[in-house]
Image (spheres, rainbow, N blue to C red):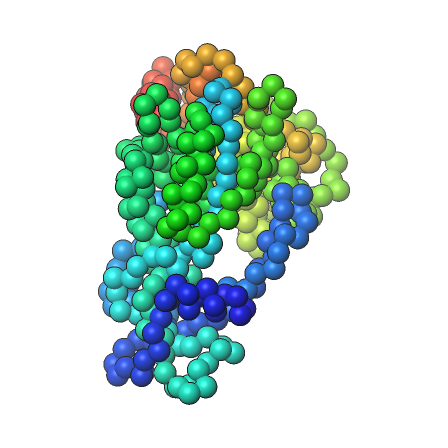
Length: 399
């Protein structure tokens, strides 16, 4: 806690001022967290001071709050490029990232509990820098970091504002930003190291070395340069949360031609656990395209799930239990970008809408996929196929 307070003072996060009249005073509290390694072992214990953003007044304490996050397709694309070029992957962690953001609004906060100023106990903190918990904090940090990158020669991608590319002659460096986590790769290790030095001169960073764990993805490397990405730890934690960590495994996530009525079965008395597990499963499709169709199916019954819908959900978890180590291998090969699309016709017995499915490859590496119910009813199987083709073409154009 003392380290956190010292970091806040070093950044000049606030000034102590007399409590203003007719101003909203935001609360503060301490949040404690255990950070773990990819194998589940404890890395360190953290204490963080956060502002109670829920007490902020819109239009007074904050205005814009949107901050972009990197798309999953972008992460897979960069992993594929690194594997195909045999580039090394580096990871950086920005220390106290949100404290770098500059506030545009006037925000007052109560002094942190246990660290009140003995001379001015009734004073409040007038924030000069952004702080964790503020509604505008992610936006302020993102604007600060991305605003500095053009000075280092980086260009922001028009397709994904969290992707940055720097060209130096025939060499390139690629940077991905996810909140305060950074992935770097490039054609020359010396150029990547130079970028790390330039960033570290402005922002306090921890060089995590070779990329091994990012956004719940476990990254490993084969001797031939191939890259393997999986979510084994995430999947194990999900099974434990659902009470399915000792369940009997099955080989497929759902039966062929699985069709369920929305009103079929007895409604669950508490649908919270169903919704929670389905939400977690959606993130598991980051590296598991084989689960997309089944997860898309259970997503359609979130409003009023029944015991039969929950049985289908449990089958997905049983499949995961038997395939915990499955993931994606990114390898070298052709640079051809190609895609496959398909659609059924009126398979949804509730709405008669069709389902689109597609996958996009860069060489031999799958980088984008989707299984999604179409937005309107198709009057023929041909129409359903063309709708799927249009969605696939749109994704290709974005890539």
